[in-house]
Length: 229
Ligand SMILES: Nc1ncnc2c1ncn2[C@@H]1O[C@H](COP(=O)(O)OP(=O)(O)OP(=O)(O)O)[C@@H](O)[C@H]1O
Image (cartoon, rainbow, N blue to C red):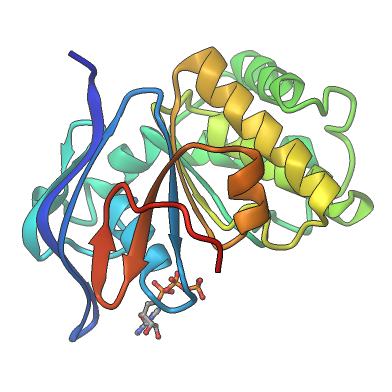
């Protein structure tokens, strides 16, 4: 039986006092690629934030890579974060240091100490995203597509079982978006990484078909049929 990497049962997703999604039931297996689609403001980011421990799960059950979301407190969040990688639309790189130092910053923050091992790991993830020779570049010296590759490299640092990507192609032109999608699918295939990706880019979904769940009117609909909006 496939390992379940993300599981929510009767979960209610809140932003402060506001119920955003009611009775969410979701199960995503190891190695699966799953789109999270839905109109703006329907709760895609809120759902992902719950999965990476940024929003508490107050009602219902949930586990991510074996971590019980109901028992999550601020002390356990760093352990959860080490098991997953998060990719954002706006890259969120530190602008005052080069790519190598951006990546080393994350390694140090997640407990790495040995300089040689850190250098090896940084070289390894940059190689995986096709940026082998770009470690000494500053973020502002890179194109949007290259910065998104660095963001994905950062997500790969701790060899995560799960990558949560929030509109990773949102700021990219179609050609660069396709390159990023190819990279994400390649990572999922080569390393058995589960990927959940929020998007409202139906061009991308049509070109790179995969499982899809949808947020709509306060609910999450699983296996929604593909309709073009
Ligand atoms: N930090 C916050 N505090 C309070 N309410 C929030 C917060 N962030 C989002 N919301 C509200 O939660 C609802 C869902 O927002 P969310 O960002 O999860 O939707 P989304 O589907 O990801 O939208 P988008 O596609 O625009 O990113 C919206 O009504 C939004 O106004």
